[in-house]
Image (cartoon, helix red, strand yellow):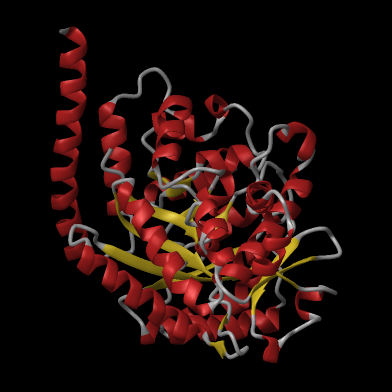
Length: 415
């Protein structure tokens, strides 16, 4: 299907993990270690820049040498795969609570980032990720990116500007290679557990990045487990700084990714709207807040619905019971996205569109449902109006091609 745009994605969980295992971990100078909590971390460095205590690891093992010593390299690589995804044969046994799975989730991000933030991997990883989304018929993506320092073999660190420029260069090269791919934007993000002083610094950094890279930086968000982090209202003074200075800084807040009610975090979904968010990341709890629901619809602020993510992270077990089912029936603005496909064992957007169509859409869902959701992803993107119009023209051609395939399938079945 012509999937349109992916608007809720995270930078270290874009590309299938098998690429990381089969490519990144086979590069020269790639070391691995076990953390005290039995997680894994990677690091690239030469012998002249050996960093024994990095990432709280006591011993670093050169993977190239280790693979030569073991009998079953395939099984070892499979173990790396298992350590970089949440995929397991017994999820109910392995993840018995949201806190347990979120802890594991965060550890996987840390492990993946230790590979991806190596500068040579950083650019190649992103290009391959764009290729995977492009093969899934996705024309444009927006990623939440913390922009942690990328590093070189000798330990040299690159700043946030370097990361943004790297994203720009890779996106430009990919578009040159694939002219019908539209582009990429980055939503600069920070962990929601930080304090007020740190948030003030990050907001100032966000304003600087948005001004310096207007074609690439879309705005600002906070990431991490919502229930365990600070509520939006905790940062109200810092988040109001751009408006008080007369500076535009679009917000794309994660909010309502919780099944709790009556807690301060639960009010994020209303505060996100009061703080003028452009979209609401997840918005799972919006049905519990009539005011927020009405305001979201009136202001045409869409929810970024991520079906697989909500299921895997234990907000809902049966997608037929997902709050988005009622919202979809009411015509509430929403888009479908994949959140962290690499960690969930999926690819691109098709898996989440399938889940949304089969589980959330109900028996009355049809091709027009998919068409509207895909068009929404372009409409509610951070692209300029002109770019949206051009993207829709391109998308409609791809949609017609998709319909031709579907019709041919049914005609052949009838024959």
